[in-house]
Length: 383
Ligand code: GLN
Image 1 (cartoon, rainbow, N blue to C red):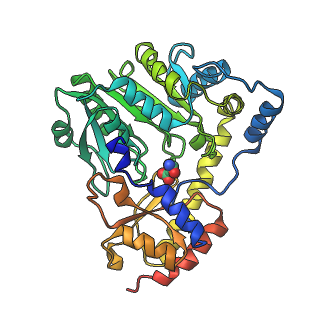
Image 2 (image 1 turned 90 degrees about the horizontal axis):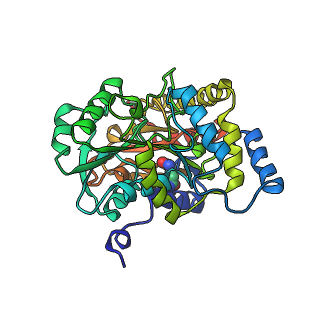
C-alpha cells in the first residue's frame, strides 16, 4: 500500500463526528451549519434534478455556472475572469486543491505550507511528490513575517498553498501580509494555490481581498472557492477554480481524470445562487456573526479564554488556563464526559506544535449553542 495514506489516521473531523453520535453530544466539532441553507437555492437544485439534465455535464462545468462565477467575483472582488478560459467547476474545493497540486508539483518540488493548516494539505502535497516547507504562524495575529518566508522559500519552491481566511485560527491576513507573500511568490516564480473557501464568511465589516489581485499574482494564482461555504451547504461539494489560461489548461487535465464532472443539478442551483442580491450574503454573514457573539459571550461568562474570530464558522479556546496541556485528551473527555464535541487544534500541525487550543463550530442554532454552554458550565473556570 502507499505509505503516505496507509500511515494516516482517519480525519479528526470524521472521528469527532462519530464520537459525537456515540455519546449523543452536541457536535461543535466538524464545521457545518445547523441551518438547512437557502430554500430558493435548494429548490433550484430539486427542480434541476426533476426537470433538468442528469447526464454528464461539460467537463469544465456548466457554462451558466462558469459565467455566474466570473460575474460574482467581478462584483465581490473586482476580478476580471474569462469564463471560457479561466473558470472550472470541481467536486468541491478539496478536489480542486488535490488537482492543483497534481497539476503544478513534480516530485522533489518544494511547497510552502502555513501551520496551522487544514488536515488534507500535507498528505496531498506529499502524494504529489512535493517536499513541504512550513511557515509556523503564531498567536495572537497569526501573521506573516519576512524572516519566516525567507526561511521557507528557496530556489526549489514551486508552489504555496495558502488558506485565507484561515481555518482553524479564524483570522484574515492583512493587506501587508498579502503583499509580502505576493512579493515572495513573484521573486521565486512560485504558483499560489489559494484556498479561499471562507471568503464570504467574514465578520465585522471586513471584505475579503484575494491574493490573486495583488501585483504580479494574476498569472500565477489558482483561486479556489466553495459553494458549500458560500451557501452554507457543506455537503454539496461544488468548487469553483479560477486561474489564467496557461495554468487552467493543466488544472483541467488533472480534473478530467479525478472526477471529470460535478453533478449538473447542483451546478445549476449554484449558478442561480451566485447571482443572489447582496443582502443575502450580508445577511448570512450577520447571522453567523450573531452566533459567534452569542457563543463567545457565553464562553467568556463561564470564564473560558476565547480567542478572537474574524471569519469562518469557528472560534478557539485556550485551555491552558483550565490547567489542560493536551488538547486531544481534553476533547476526548469533553465529548465522553460532558457531551460536547470540539476539534483539537494540534490536528492542524505537522508536528503538533500547539497543544492548548480547542476549536468550536458556532454555526449553529441558538438552542444548540445554549445546550453546549450549559454542558460546558461544568468546566467553569473559577477565579
Ligand atoms: N472543513 C470542515 C472543518 O474544518 C471539515 C470538512 C471535513 O470533515 N473534511 O470542520
